[in-house]
Image (cartoon, rainbow, N blue to C red; front, side, top):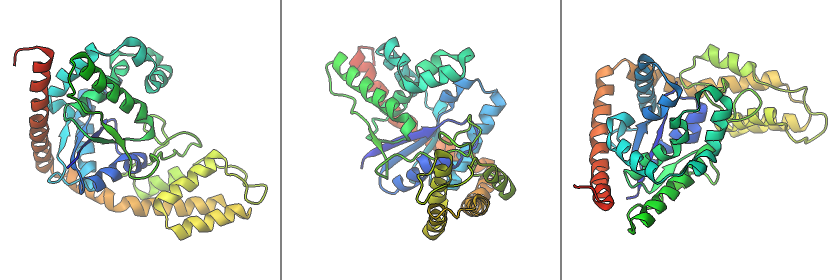
Length: 328
């Protein structure tokens, strides 16, 4: 059975973009693959969270993973920092990574532009750590969103380079995996770009009904179409994309026809979209609260996940040390 590995940074609650871009795939994949999912707390250190915020965020993401349907008996869930072998492989991969190629990574350039006062080495070597997360388990597939495609190519590059330097076919090249033909990119509510925590345009799985309605009703729109079958501008297309994800096909078709016939009432569309998002989130929201109240169970899941992940990673690290020339 092919091995799948993927994770998410604990930088806040999961939002619809996380769910449809990644977690929904995780839930499906655990039935068909040998899956391991992790909470990437080392990756989150690039933004310098406080210790309490880091601990709280890790517990929150663990509870939300479980609430979304990940079964730890089928797919172990672990905290990245509980698997020390990842850091050792990160070191080895960095020895074979070059400054120029790391500086050319689009996600690094974007973050450096947005936060010029915090362009740290962790941001620069993010692809190396991501590659270590994947290669330490010799994963076959990694479910990723569009924004991670370049980092996946870097992981493949590091695997090839290690094999070439040491003249051995050791690391396989992990594949990006999507259940759909194209990676799912969930738009935000501010009229452009993807949904994200830092962008402030997200709807979280734990948001209550009033919060969801308030956010949706404030979404960017325009004055409406001025001709039949007019191409939707990005802010309007974003609302329809969200509706495709959470509403019934009949609901989507109704408002799409209204738009094409120049009869759209955005207020009505937003009310329906808010109701459909709440209907989607409500059962997940209830399960999140249930898991968050059971600290003992969360600790058990994390501990057992770490044991499974460490066993997998230790085998790889022992072999890598021997290949490099260190004493075993």
